[in-house]
Every structure is written in C-alpha cells, then in structure tokens.
Image (cartoon, rainbow, N blue to C red):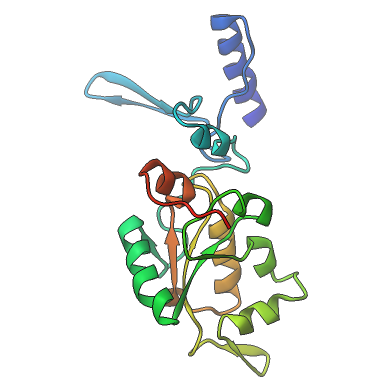
Length: 204
C-alpha cells in the first residue's frame, strides 16, 4: 500500500514539475489526510521544511523521522519549554532530577539544552549489557529480579524535535524496566522547537 502511495505521489510531483521527489510521510502509516470541512476539501501533508538551517537539517523523512504523538506513554507527562526551564531550576539544580538528551553523541555535541546530560536512547535498550549500570546511576536499586525505583531521579527527556522518536524509545525502555511513569516527562518539542524560540543552546 505504501509503495503504491509513493508511486502515485511521485507521479503527481513528476507531472507537475518534471522532477520526481520522494514524498514526506507524516507517520509510517499516514502519507496525508484528506477530508471535507463545510464543503471545502482539506488535505494535510508534509512538505519541504523552510526556514533556518537547523530546521532543514533536522527535517528527515519518516521513518525514522515520524511525527510523534503528544502522549507517548500512559502516566508520562508531556511538557513545554517553561516546564523544562522550571525542571532545570528546581529538580536538576536541587539534585533530584536530570534533563536527558536522548540523541547520539555526534549530534549532541553540535548543540543541546543547557544542563542536559547525554544518555543516548540505545544505551537504555534492554539488549545493552551495561543498562543495569545506567539504571543504578539514575538512582535505581536492584531488588531480586527487578528494581526498586523509590529513590530514582525524576527525568525529563528530549531529542531533536516533534518528529524524533529517540526520547520516546528511551522512555519505552525505561518503563519496560519498571521506571515509574510519574518520574518521567517528555519534552516533545526537543531541540528544534527550543532553538526556533530563540532559547539558549549550549555546545558541550
């Protein structure tokens, strides 16, 4: 089905401009959405990203750059920029929380939110033989075959932007290990929205 949609979209693009361009998917299952609104035909789709260099650099096709839902896991709060700043000012400064940048190190070093710690999403995967050490560093205590997260850090996690799934994958790995959802927060806007708002970017 997806191949047919790609072929159709490429055919339309080729017919209109003489050039075949790969369409940008919204999610892995949605290329576009069309509906009727008070007699007007409406189509929602993704197009080329305009604007600053960072926005264009961060915009990729889906997968992997699929637009993320606002709620990624039950009980995990989705937060905005003001909440991230308050979290840094409160929990992080007070030593009870961490702001985690879930991206890979080569991307992290090009710029991140001040005060963020780089914990790539891949390191939290259950297959990582060192994941237990990371959980311990986050304040978890081994309890038999499971974990005691009573003293674990509060975490706010982000990655590149609303289309980046790395922080949602990291959160899924943590919740599968038993990390309490109420100790986790998801900053969906990520570095892209943070930067677009003109907020300070640190260069580790």
